[in-house]
Figure 1 (cartoon, rainbow over the protein chains, first blue to last red):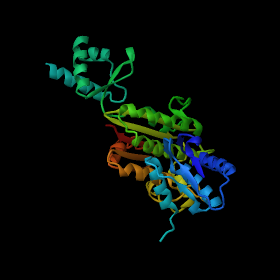
Figure 2 (figure 1 turned 60 degrees about the vertical axis):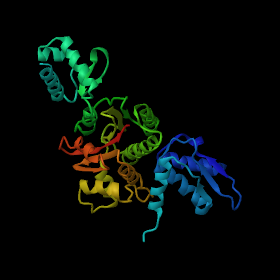
Figure 3 (figure 1 turned 45 degrees about the horizontal axis):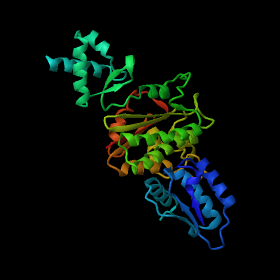
Length: 93
Length: 261
């Protein structure tokens, strides 16, 4: 199941907006038991780590970390946001 | 005596760095004709030493490459409430700030590449959102943040300032033993710690530092209280504009620079 992120705006910044977007996504998503939830960033201008962290954390809590996938993109704001989110959530050694 | 007149024009403009100088003032001050002043101004403009600010009768000439954020810094640091905040710069709510973030896209006309624009928007977005995240209900007087972009000397300068509580007070809530404003700023940019714990936050300024340190064409400096930090190759240049006045800055002022092609 693919989510077109651009439907939530082209500049995606702030935690309150991310929380709101996640709630909307969850209210409309009906993936099958093993179906992946894919986030498609094509058409998005910029994403901040705060917005993306809220969305990913919320979706992963409901569907599991393995099922929530960010599709490949060359948008540097998405790439760098994912790096910092990954580093922040990685357990300390 | 061309060179001497040109040198005098430059000296006059440098002495009035913040506001710039109108041609009519140069004529009066230097005792030369208007034609001579305009002749030298054209040469100084074409050599990239000067830039024009304003239009028509308010046209002023300023030294190229120096951002002018005096009004923003006065607004952010004055002890007394600033009165009416200029609505073209001050975003009183987060929605207004987020709406104005799109202005960064216009820098594509100035030489910011399509690949760089998303990074600058997301970094500035995190800084501006922080103003609201940490000061909602706690503004000293005027709510919101000053958000201004200037292009000068082939660089885009973005300033975000607030009249909030400052970073030390946010960090002190979760790290009561933090030793001062300088250390609080360093922690805010370098450690994953949320000033709004127990909420799981704290990656925004780390993202900003990481992004603006990665690329050779950018930099950032941030001042809050007596604390002042800079990151990235052009960080020291940003820092130089936030060193004065040396009196404590109660809120937070952040300056980001990005070189244009």
